[in-house]
Length: 347
Ligand code: NDP
Ligand code: GDR
Image 1 (tube, protein in one colour):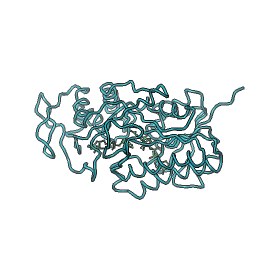
Image 2 (image 1 turned 90 degrees about the horizontal axis):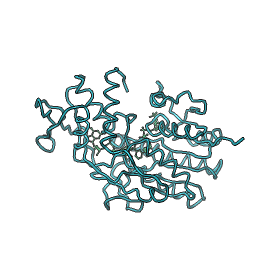
Image 3 (image 1 turned 90 degrees about the vertical axis):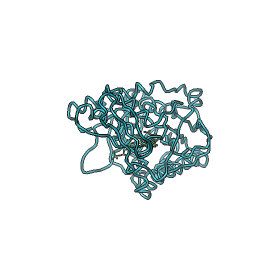
Image 4 (image 1 turned 30 degrees about the horizontal axis):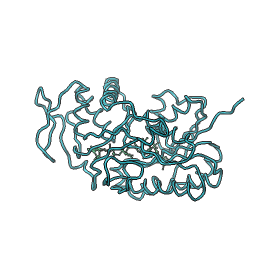
């Protein structure tokens, strides 16, 4: 009998960790997923996907900042593939907590790479790199060899982790691959990120549970894709013959303002924009009621103005391509948030 492949997914309580665990279980893997000890459990995503009690899923407490527990984790899970998704992943918070972000999102990755080098260098390793590394972009669209220029402590920490992954590949022959993923969203996205903040607020406003949505920079442009497709890309990256770096993106970019209009439209409301800068407001086209206003509270000390990725290499070498349009993705998120808010769910 063929034994099942084993995968270790760090950060299973996050958006991508939950979807990736679901995909790997469907593919017949035995999955170990890591979560952080906290005063209250945080398994709502894997519960919503219906995999929390799957017989091939084990959940293990783990903190990425601890080298000795990284070694023990690699020993006990004995994985064929490691997907490192754990991180302090919120760009806004990284300006408030630069040292913690460097420690978790940057150095933490070296703990895992060292554990692999010590315990079993044949393990395949996926690092969750990010379009935030391009920051102040040096070319449009961005590809694998576009020069990096990160604009936040998060982007800088991720760039360090990215280069350490490349370095372990080149120095020790470890199968370390890096996926430079552009923003990807879903109904399981955390509510601190702008798309989910918008879809949740649009749902609450049409249901009469919220008055106004306050946002920061409406001009920022992002390349937004559907998270479920991106975790399939992660898996494909680790099935390639050689370790490498790949961009995953949709090759379309829109402003935060456009996403707001799209989300309200999905909830049945047309938004009209008036004013500019900090005075800009979004009004209900029918009643004139204020729906959206700008608050400097949500501006960042340094902003990434424009991201748009070209995933041609992933299409050519991995057969991966984004399928879901931004309109479909946005509608999926609005529908989920309308349902949750109608049911009184806190997620
Ligand atoms: P989330 O913020 O939803 O999930 C992050 C996960 O990391 C959570 O499970 C979190 O646990 C865990 N974590 C945080 N700190 C630690 C720590 N010290 N030790 C162990 N685990 C920790 O992120 P996403 O799912 O959206 O993203 C997954 C990865 O991909 C991240 O590394 C992110 O930076 C990267 N990325 C994401 C993109 C996106 O658009 N979503 C794009 C490009 C890269 P807890 O639940 O306890 O907080
Ligand atoms: P990002 O995502 O920083 O791209 O990082 P986020 O959704 O937080 O911001 C996107 C853009 O929207 C602007 N913005 C606001 N953002 C938030 N969160 N809240 C607001 O009120 C608001 N108003 C405007 C931001 O300034 C920004 O320009 C995400 C994370 O998932 C990272 O982990 C990942 O690496 C990158 O995507 C790719």
